[in-house]
Length: 452
RNA sequence: CGGAGUGUAGCUCAGACUGGUAGAGCACUGCUUUCGGGAGGCAGGGGCCGGAGGUUCAAAUCCUCUCACUCCGACCA
Picture 1 (cartoon, rainbow, N blue to C red):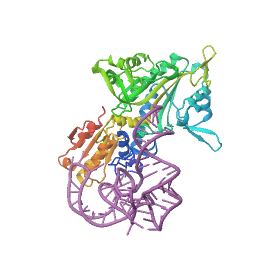
Picture 2 (cartoon, protein in one colour):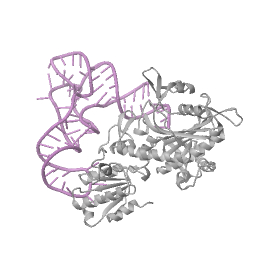
Picture 3 (cartoon, rainbow, N blue to C red):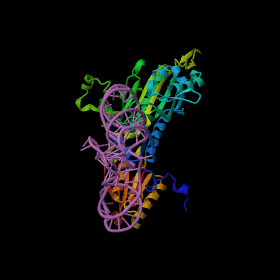
Picture 4 (tube, rainbow, N blue to C red):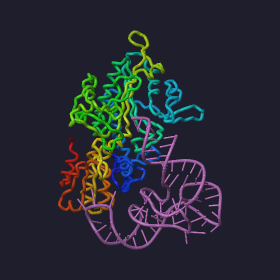
């Protein structure tokens, strides 16, 4: 007899118990495909305009994306902290942004009539932490990040989690003694971002962005290509074909050549698009598509450190004002963005790295002794091998079960039905290609669980 | 914040113009027939028609106010 904790090892993985309220019909409020599919797949529920609850299926994906982001930040020596969502207004008065920010900032007054705000970003707070504790150039450089919910009271939230008011964001901050140091930090992040998106199965292309009053070229937006993207983008085809995961990277070495490789080719959003330059690219290398912004990095020098007096003692003993940069990734937005980039008529197609489960196991005829035996054996093997599987053991007709499985887009399906079981086979289906193969259960299991 | 809409069953929507006992399909419950791609039959349950005022013998329906949500625009991770 296995106890409750054993049965729930790895979480609930049986459809008969899993809370996943799928919908056949499309809710009226959803316009874009990722929003429609997230609602239909039971991933999220809207709480109010631009604010969502994450249901188990959606939450699993959110966590996977968050974890990839975390691992790639850790890999470049960026250290994780967690700052609060609620911040004191005084901090923002120091930088001058409390007055500048406008109605997008959600302002709150506590019981002591103290002015607070729900943070839309954390430059002031991290600068305050840093100036309190870091006093010498010897402690530099430093990279810190956190992954936290933010709030921006957008006038017009839309597109589901792609443009919510509340959103989960990774924001990192770099602290250096001078511009050269800041640029090294910038390059580390630049390269880290390329790997991060590549691991999620996305083609992300860095595009020059407006760097504001600081000037220079140290500001890039990371844009993924998706037909339903919010803005037009133009770039050189080679950028789409670079494969970052195959590039060996020494994060402590000179990253400039890698950055140069990406920035030397033309890439621009419609705001910065220069048709004349674009026309000089050979016609077959021109890419003109739609894109979604999923990250933004920039160097901003002493914009916050100067007014907030974040200084350290330099080599000569004189105070040096810190050079800073900040680096954002829209974690919750990425859930929608991945779907925009990867879906078909039937539903979502998750890349394996972010899929809520790796395998969807469908028992087409629950109650049939032979089907039940084969399916539950496969289920047990998956659990034992720690392969994430969603076992559809609901007593329902094949149609809805198969349709649900396509809708939620798990990379692999194993379909156990009476017809196949009679001749000793099950069907495995690749969600992305639609390719179906009939194999003996054991072979099917081996094929899907073999480590690549 | 400008402009335009919509709020009726869990979901998609009719009913409103022309006031008179609340509707359909899907979903849900039970039985049944089906059984490899959202099936069929029978029987059920489910609504203060977003909220508050008003007009009227009578309001989902007409009027006023209010709240919420959506779309277009400007803005934006």
